Image (cartoon, rainbow over all chains, first blue to last red):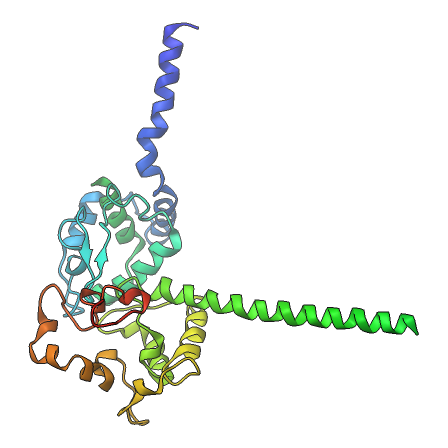
Length: 137
Length: 160
């Protein structure tokens, strides 16, 4: 066995490890991409930057929860707190790796929190941008 | 004749079997809804004891989850059903409840907060007077666990 082959093998073994963090969220993100395409034929992918703007934005649908940051704080790598005082695990994938891996759970909380904070359902574009931002931290 | 007796015996054994397994099934079905209640109703606050509100209160709360104390806490009908059954079977006015919890609650009133139940305001009168529930660490009277460390497991003794 020559050394180049061995190096190639080692490199190939490394790729899945590097891709792991994003791979766990891929099925959920792919499903939102399909939905976003259905919502808008001009869909051109998700953006972490748009997700950040969305996460930090203030809305006027509710005085109790005007923003995602009301409970999740402005730093998604830190734990948040519910209005009843219970800790919320950080939203950033790097801190809470199983976030956005369970499609049903993800959809349940988008449904609830988008209604609470924005007073409407979120678009698939917004959900995908949000997860992309959380996976980038 | 012997065959008849044997048949009767076998029948009795079968009936006994159905009885025993029937009971077991009921027993294990009780554990299910409880787990569903804790899973779905302790994400934002502790799973409050079912015994602290009457059935009509739980019914109103479950019927308005889209406007749940300033937040949307909607559950799918599938997720809701076992929770409704559990709360109904364990509410203050169920066979599992304690009638003292309902003292001074008129039948015409449907409380939606445990903190507005007379048993609760009596037990916490001194703390309410001291505005202890406004402290940043406590946030609200719904944050039982801030003082009662065993609250999530249903323990509310003074020293917990």
